[in-house]
Image (tube, rainbow, N blue to C red; front, top):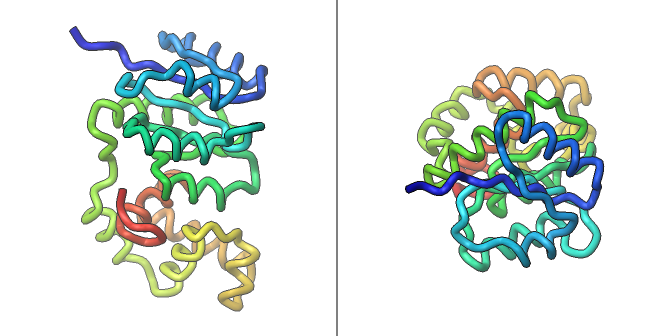
Length: 206
């Protein structure tokens, strides 16, 4: 008899926890909520199938520290980082450290449900989602300038900094990003980052 995957919500904001809980319960899930990383670690048993939605910035142990703790105990729990605007560099760092995705606030219910569905699917498939050879093939279709922008993006740099380093305008960076998304068939920034990391750009494969 298989164990039903569980969804863990780790966020110090009570309103966020309650909102996510209501959203997931409406779709037939039974999420467990925790107001801190420490509370989650005290309750979590390594090997429990499911996924975790973790706020990046929390008092005490933050999302990155929680991710590192899970890695140290050998937990292969798919972790989705929930980030505020302007935390892209930290979100990319989290993905390099093993997070499978990140979601920027404010997010739509549809976006969150799609991310949870993907995370639960990965929970049953050994965390393998993006095939490195396929990702590398898509990146080969980028222009040299687009690849430069991608490498800087995956290093966590915002558009203004990328523009300054490449000697182009922020608007041109935005155009390159849009073209990259299309060429690489990425439906979000996090998807673009996942493809880049799988292809070995900015941190290697996971």
